[in-house]
Figure 1 (spheres, helix red, strand yellow):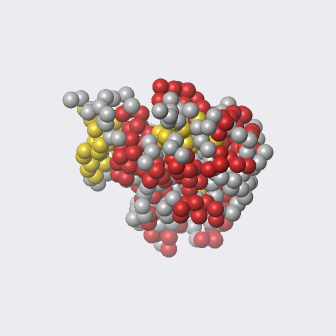
Figure 2 (spheres, rainbow over the protein chains, first blue to last red):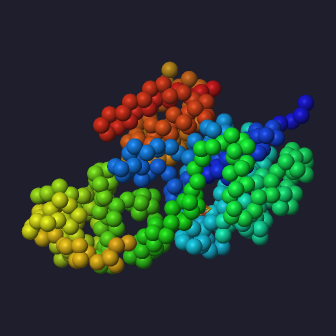
Figure 3 (cartoon, rainbow over the protein chains, first blue to last red):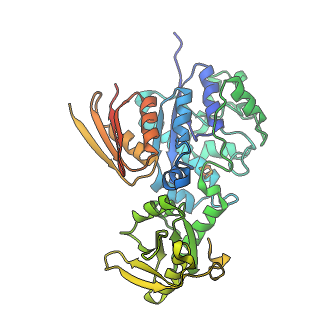
Length: 350
Length: 75
Ligand code: SF4
């Protein structure tokens, strides 16, 4: 009887990891998926928060991919450990705040740990959907061995989509998988992947534009850097990550910024944070919920209130009454005339 | 038959799924876990997670602010 070999696959929810798994399934390898949640992953959050997205499909791509492939999926919360990857990347950042190379090393390293912890389940090796030259930072010919080495996976890390361009790994050497039936994809051209997907009969898949997370997004990265600068500290909590995805962010002075909801869904979401943040909303008119991140001195109440009033139904009114509540204190009311569009200059928007 | 409860309110997906997964890992086949959450994403994610990993969603209700999903742990 031939022994069935088992691999764990890093599943991001995109097409490449999906193909990598299918290629090995074709060779009779049993695969289970693992997905790491850093907090920055492109997920349905904003769907859950914003109104206009309510009708869109709210699927988790990694779960969906696993279901299409018929494999188990283990989702691992790495939020805390990921902080060190993002704050101190040995190999630096990509175009934005994305520490892709360190991130890959970290995730493959976590997969190595995971198969050790689950040794009873008998996983033999790790696979990823990496393709040489696909991504400017992490997926290059010279970074592939760096990831294998620094993650501790060494020759137990197989990339089925570009294995033919890389040195032999143990699964190939030992004959667990047939190297001849692996691929030699390289470069940014996605046609080979699309063709292979077709061959496998996969026609519905997510095609993330940038990367697998918000850190590749310029606007998101800018807001993150602004937060660190304003706080004079490069730390973050889960709530910070979430709030950066919600609302308009307006910083009129260095001491504070306003997070102003863009619709009822976001207002409801921000309401959940009123015990932690000072909140401002209009009483005399309907309007958005706003939170204050930073220090709001009393002398700045009129400034903050006039900005928030600008985004509600009372924007044309002479005067709007607003509620300002500091957590743990009595709320107070303030009357102010809303700012005009010009009074909220573009530079204040993050 | 024991029945446990998990409070995943205000958590955003995939956290409710991760919490469910981790709790179910400590339970035995046939036991039930009721997950209370607020992110509507859980309505598709928890059942998808359960299907993939061999568990069963036996009950799911959504009212104005809360979603309750009961999972029966698989073998
Ligand atoms: S895009 Fe984000 S999740 Fe993907 S490798 Fe880069 S840092 Fe990691």
